Amino acid sequence: MVLKNFYWVFHKALSDDTIEKIIKDCDSEPLQKAETFDDKQRGGKNAVMETKADWQDQDYVRYTDIAWVERDWIYDIITPFIHTANRDAEWNVDIDWKETMQYGVYSKDHFYDWHQDSDHPFDDTNPIGLRGKVRKLTIIMLLSDPNTDYEGGELQFDFGPYEPNRYHTVSEGDKGNLIVFPSFLFHRVKPVTSGVRRSLVCWNCGPQWR
Image (cartoon, rainbow, N blue to C red):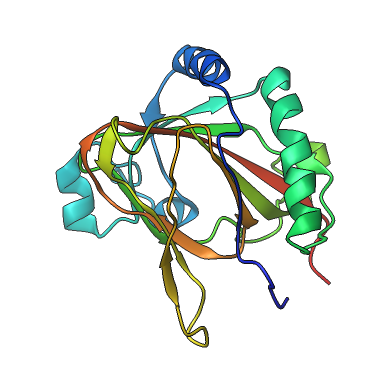
């Protein structure tokens, strides 16, 4: 798939009142240590990182706290933006399912190293509507102000070895921005050096690539 646009940003798409409501709902869900497909494949007692020392010793790709969130009113807000980005960025991918959203709380030293959101089709252990589908578009909702709430934690893309500007740091800009991109793109969240970075991510899925 040749991309004319690697990602799409909606500036200040969420109002402060909406962000406050999202955070309140997300904070009502229990936080847990994040794990990834790679962590699960490694297995063992260290598959979930409990401390900074765990990822330093084990070379993990992620160290942060998350909660799983399902709220119809949030899906209703973000769905038009997802379809607009899909059209205007000229990706035009088939999407027909949204996963449970993931609330990320990045405190000092938390990070998420290089990874793709799209790995393989979902198997029969997943909900019926998700089986056989793949992640196609990722949307990140920025719930914190990078100018006042935290330092570090930059979102960075790897566009591949044939791109003249391979590594690209997104200017996240303002709290309330929405960032949409194809889920197969390699990306990372660099370590937070101070404060707390909050975000909400939703993966939009569809039939397997042809």
